[in-house]
Amino acid sequence: QVQLVESGGGLMQPGESLRLSCAASGIIFSSYAMGWYRQAPGKEREVVATITSGGSTNYTHSVKGRFTISRDNAKNTVYLQMNSLKPEDTAVYYCNANRPAYSDRRWVRMDYWGKGTLVTVSS
Image (cartoon, rainbow, N blue to C red; front, side, top):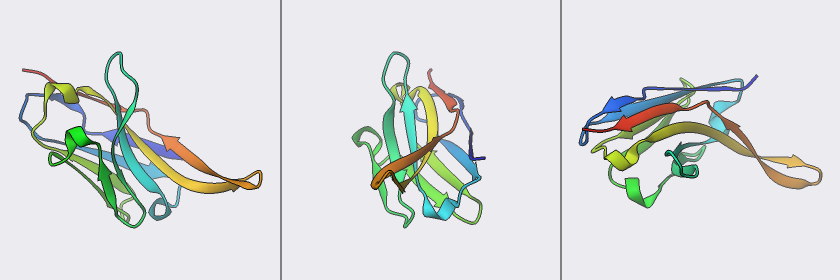
């Protein structure tokens, strides 16, 4: 059974830092790309940062230079270091694990999601 468990959310003030963690089980962690997504109230879920199985990273424009995604394959954990937090970073943050899979004679993307952790940035 695949489980992704996020932790580290909380109430923060603008400018503060926070680190989210996502512990994975039930998958061969090192073979999965990992990502952090977020969903603010009344908005659609958006990608925040991704890291491939090889360690290449990508960030959405609004968090570049402030957030850092990293992974520890020995601990089956992906992190999101968030610095210089802004009120617009307020959202539920979700952990994602994905890899390509061959099904019905075609390649598809297999996704797993955590239940999310709430980050609130407010003065």
